[in-house]
Image (cartoon, rainbow, N blue to C red; front, side):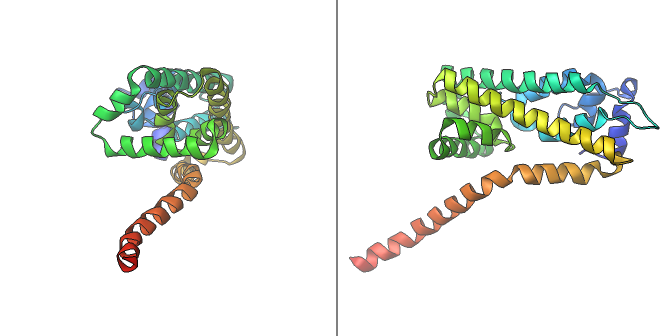
Length: 236
């Protein structure tokens, strides 16, 4: 998890002896902006691997570390983090799409992870319900879903030009919004490190909001499916 002590350690890059790729503070401490690029790239389309990497919980703290104060200079360069986040998001999305176009269906069929298959089904429903453009933008802001959304788009044969345009829009909006949100708070709130853990939890909670209508619809459909046999029996 992302404790305030770990974030403060991220400013002292030489003190980290081991890197945990699932720990945002560890990644930022060891690799800085390049760590942002690598993790966001993987989380944006490498299917099973991306499920275990931080996305929202990396970009937001990275933005905080770009903000300086009277007591401490910035620990990361804002322009580098913004650039690396955007490149990682867009490039990762394109690679995920290519994976989907060339063997993605077989890869999804072989996976034994229930989380992956459930997220793939949600991604397919999202594309069908909202259309390619809107779904690719919305899906970027939803954890887990964004990792499988791009390969699923490739499996379903979303036109390459349409996919590239809208996944790029979604990737840039998502990555820059989170980094700049962290930077703004880091620049305006003293000792923001002390509040990072609840703030990151809030970011994750907000990012799940786009899924609520889909979850309600799925619950309603399951309830109707359970009730239907009884209705059919009484009709017969």
